Amino acid sequence: MVREQIEARGIRDATTLRILREVPRHLFVDEALSNAAYGDHALPIGFEQTISQPYMVAFMTEQVALGPRERVLEVGTGSGYQTAVLARLARTVFTIERIPALARKTRERLTALGFENVFYRIGDGTLGWPSAAPFDAIVVTAGAPVTPRALASQLAVGGRLLVPVGERSQQVLRVLSRLENGAIEEESSIPCCFVPLIGQEGWGEGQA
Ligand code: SAH
Image (cartoon, rainbow, N blue to C red; front, side, top):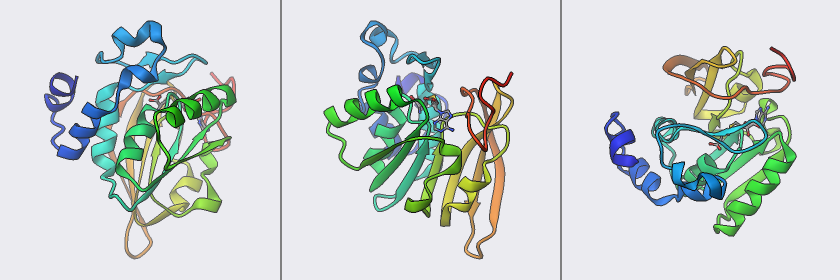
């Protein structure tokens, strides 16, 4: 997986590559799908949600360039695969999931795998986690109609926010950075395809 899908597409950061080799992706999908776990695609995880494509996880991990003392907010816990990758790189991961049953299942999974530096919340991640802010990095793994302002406001100086922004089924990865003077710089990165971010600063529930 790492050689053919990730290195071959230009991911070079040694730490990202090592962690993608070490985190056992097949443990983040149902047993019936474990043969497909290392394929070049997203996979269903129930509740109409998906575990992201390996390349996308690697790309976002390399982009966000976490240091070992950093605190990161993840919006869209899902299967917990990206959470596990982030937890191997950062000091602490704060992760928010809106579907309670999925959040509970993933929390059990990550706990069983021995992850101790992850804090979990069930709720609307478009509003961030104000009591734990500011964050050195924020990674959103669902597609938003616009960049959620609450998340941008919870970035520390030097902090990076990655968020897919666009249509419901097709987005562009936006990268926001908070500069030394407090201003926010925002640029577009690669096209991507995430499930919708649903919430106050996301898509409406049941919205077409
Ligand atoms: N990184 C995850 C991606 C899962 S898909 C993985 O690879 O497994 C995106 C997840 O975001 C879904 O589980 C969905 O329920 C969740 N989500 C959507 N809107 C959300 C919101 N406003 N707050 C928190 N989670 C949200």
